[in-house]
Length: 165
Image (cartoon, rainbow, N blue to C red; front, side, top):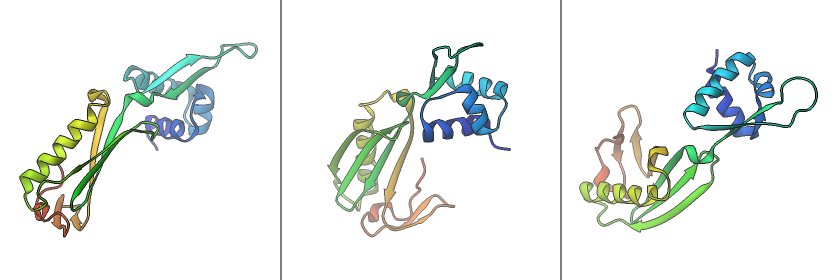
């Protein structure tokens, strides 16, 4: 069975704001399960919730939406001479972009220093505690299982080095 928290996040990402009753129906989880998952997500600052206008008898609907400021990701395109970076929010909106030259594509330490400096630069545009991931794309042959760059014609300083930090 799927994780209710993940199902709710995926549903909100696809649809946008929704009331709890609709989320229960759309995900197939009970209203109590949806309520617990939404409460955790709200406590963690990932979603916002508000009470809608009553539509008749009973409780008014409680609407839930992703808080776009709650999570950011940095994406980096590492080319042979240039690093390009963008910060995206939870809604997929690009918040900032920047480009900087690579000092020396053959020098591993210089290259990693350039990447770290670039991440610092673009991450300054968002709340640092909300930064969830940094992803770097490189050309060449990557051993994903071994987390290593086997061969990068554009960035030979990465050859044989670890990918994940």
